Amino acid sequence: MDRTTEGWLYGFIGMLIFSGSLPATRAAVSGFDPIFVTVARAAIAGLIGLGLLVAFRQKWPSRANLASLAVVAFGVVLGFPLLTALALQHVTSAHSLAFIGLLPLSTAIFGALRGGERPSPAFWLFSTIGSAVVAGYALSQGSAASPVGDGLMVAAIVVCGLGYAEGARLSRQLGGWQVISWALVLCLPFSLVLSGATLPATLADAGASAWAGLGYVSLFSMLIGFVFWYRGLALGGIAAVGQLQLLQPFFGLMLAATLLSEPVGWPLLGVTLLVVLSVAGAKRFAAAAPTPIRQRS
Image (tube, rainbow, N blue to C red):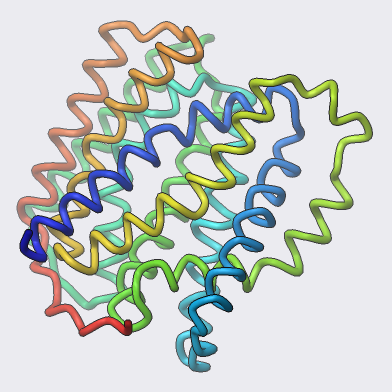
């Protein structure tokens, strides 16, 4: 199997893992406080990441890389999990997945800002169309929509795009799994202290589904998914493999309907499809990715 094919395979597995994040988060916040879910998932994954870094004798990142790792930590370790956990107290996971269709676009925008790329006017046209579709859908829901939940989801997409772009750029230097592991370790003192401070008084009342959701987002969404995702980006190319995110809303919708019995009607499916098509068009006219730097072993 050549490197490009292997990269697509790793990226596809990572995308599948991430597809379960929002349904699992909604299950977790049904029994736990959103802040506890955010810091507990980071603490659990951080301890595992620390063990991996020690076991494989990874050197401490350079001072220049620490700043980028802090951005990754802010975007995907703390920002996105907390904002989505808060949002999912106001909206269903199926509704939130319409916003996830904007993740490739958010990543591309921050990739352009960080990498100095200059997308064509057609890129920004598709960007505007995709954003307008999502905003129009949210407004059309009337009383069924939640301005707070939708606003939190928009903020989550922004910070996650920043974390994805910065992590993808840094993975060319440090390696895929090392990036997320170091980002988790940087947050470990904070996440451990807050996990203890926000620990529920009675854990037994959370319920099996909440525990299962917390376990999934801690082990798979926070660590294993990024191992596959960043490995895929490093092998197959950030711009190419990153397009696999366009499939994430569809798999997430299927999981929300199957596992949580949430209603997924044709309007939501249609909106998600339009968002995916808009982002695909934007990616088509995005600037080419820079030549990858050989990653560390």
